[in-house]
Amino acid sequence: MIIWSGMGKIVPAIAIIFMFICVPLGMWMLGERTGAAAGVIAAGVLSGLLVWLAAKGGEKQAAALIAAGQEVPEGQHPGTFFFIPTKTWAFLLPAVGVVLAFLTMSGAGQ
Image (cartoon, rainbow, N blue to C red; front, top):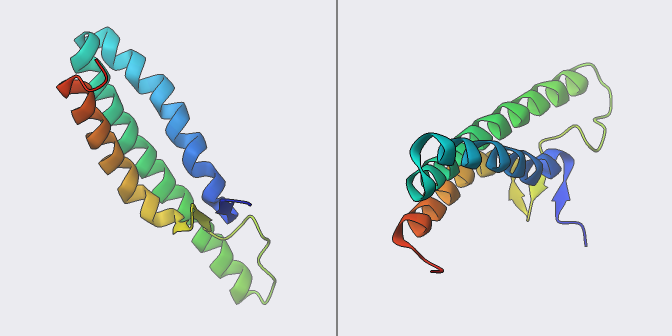
């Protein structure tokens, strides 16, 4: 079963890329636990922003194609990831980052 449609496939890709960038950078700048928590929050916020911009761009292109009387290609519309609209993930990713940061700071899993 496919869990994404349209541009929904960019949600996990962007989140993973920002996690691999922001968490080590935060740990390098602020230390082990605090830096990891700050990096997770930064990754959530930055990935949410990028997902929002990508979804808005997809909507604008789809609207332009519809206005021109053309058919919208499958990968062009904003789509969904886990049956949640892509634009909604722009708000969920920072929330997930905050929850993960809280779990990191509280020492869950240790």
